[in-house]
Each structure stands twice: as C-alpha cells, then as structure tokens.
Image (cartoon, rainbow, N blue to C red; front, side, top):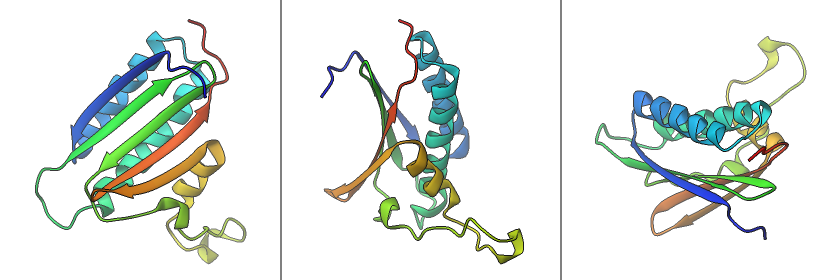
Length: 144
C-alpha cells in the first residue's frame, strides 16, 4: 500500500447545502494538491452521488445527522470515504441497472452507483451501526 501523502476530513450535516459546500471545499483542497481535472470531475461525481443517496435514503427522520467525508491521497490513489449512521445499505449489492433499450424500458435508479463502480473500486462495510462507503480512484495526474 502506498504511503498517504495528504489527508482531509470534512464532517457535514445531512442537508443538500452542506453536502454541496463540502464537495466544493474538497475540490478546492484537491485542486491545490495538483489533482487533474479528470480526477476532480470523477471525485465531484462520486461524492455527489454517494452523498445524495445517503441524504435521500439513509434516514427516516428529519433530525440532524453528521456524515463524515475523508479524502486521502497517495502517489497513485485518491481514497474517498463516506461514513454515516443511516440505514444499512451496501451499494455493492444494489441491483444492476438496465443500460440497454429505450429510456421507457428502463427502471429508474441504480445508474449512479453502477457508474461509481465503473470509475473506481467500491468497498463497503457496516461497523458499530455506521456505514463505511469507500471508493478508491486511480489518480491520472498529480502535479505536486
């Protein structure tokens, strides 16, 4: 395993404005570390997709919940980890979306998780009533 070169943790509450703010701060942090535009784009997509799923489906109440985003950089990998106390949900076990046929023949849902799995290595664990979703994204260019 590569040595971690830099690391950040960003806690945020379970609201869309907080998720969006966290995404922007994370992209700024990665930009300052020389991560390529391609990796920034994929990172934004992954955090938005997985974070939105937590906000939409993770909780049955309107209470404030804390979600933790952790980013770590090695020379070859960006590790994206989201930790939440919502309902247990293993995205790896989500049904495969239908990707062929007309739009009318397709069932909504699942495409975002499927794409995340295409972009990076998706891992999941449930521990102490917390969901840990990790995506390892290969870096295509780090300039610093």
